[in-house]
Length: 119
Image (cartoon, rainbow, N blue to C red; front, side, top):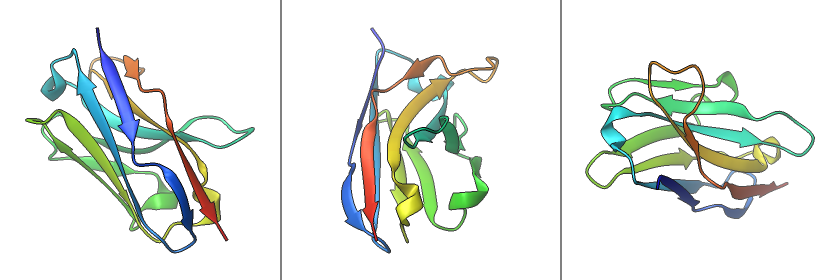
């Protein structure tokens, strides 16, 4: 059974930092592109950052470039999202996702972790 379990969310003041972690189990982690998505109330879920299977390639939404960093550890089967200079508009539920490169959509999703940035 595949599981993606996010942790590290919470309440932080604007300008602060948080580090999200996603622990994967039940899949060959190194075969999957990993991504972080977020969904704010009343809005669609959008891609924040993704990282290639080996970790050599990363992509970011324009809104988080220079502030967020995605990384992964294929031995520990974890993917991380380091978030800095947080803004109130970053408030959302953040989801971890795993996707095979040959697929158009994510194969697996975590349950989400809430990030709230106060002004």
